[in-house]
Image (cartoon, rainbow, N blue to C red):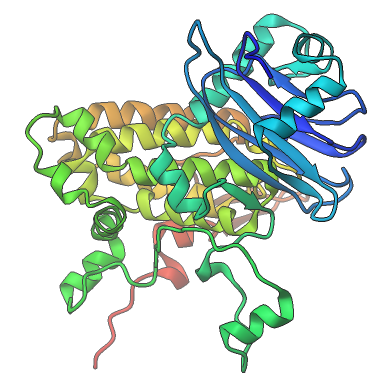
Length: 411
């Protein structure tokens, strides 16, 4: 196939009436659909399912380079009817299929649909959506993607899972489990263990501080994933660049996991996303040392929260009754960034400004109050005019009071 004028995704032998999606847009295929043209530069994710009614999906990541005047990127895949998903195909296969449909120019004009992220024909809506996807993938790099998918084609399935999210069956070893439930693709998780957030050999006060402030865990994860100890001591980068590069593995992993929940409804990715939020929002000393990372983390978090309604069935219950997970993390992080000691460090004001944006958004969307300025105890007047004293215990977990208050145990 001669080079088309714009980057193109060629999808051969794709059946009609199956679910297909690219980035934030999903649709049902037709018999004339052969792919997508006008792909913008950057990372993209294409996914399919044999039926729109099935929850099992799979997809692959691919990258579009900046187009040059003399050539353009063509990504080719063909549908495998036995496996019921897309597989790589060779250029001769693609050329043969294109020639059957009348040649490259005919295929480009009649059988390829323009890339967009909205069903709307309004150009401004489409431009806005395209920018949304770019922001949601801003920290994804080849090394992060390859480590996460652990395969050359960067393919992921709805049932793909990290080791720590797999169900353990008592009495069966790993090989016996595979023989029962089949082989699963293993995802490259960061290895976040929220039950052990201190260094090996730590005792007493150091363990207590590690349990309350997970900065050591964050630094340890980054050092193991990409050896960021070297970056920390680099003298060629300014502090802001150093901070963002220091946490790039976490930011990229967070973005991939969120998008896999959004498109594939992958349970393991949801759990990893929650672990990352829990680890970062419970860090304290790292906020002083790497404010640039936390500023960007808050920015990325807000962009993702703005897309939670795109997840089928909701990312999780965002009502007052079911939002304890996220609301509790944000309340705790608010206390951290408002500490006087945090304000003494350079970059602290930028972190506070980003948090204010997140706080403002969750209040407007869900009515969440992240501060402590609310009535816990007061008098309530009943219908018959009698007044009784009432006290709420809803915030005891966040306040570490009542049954959640610390207890001194004598050994």
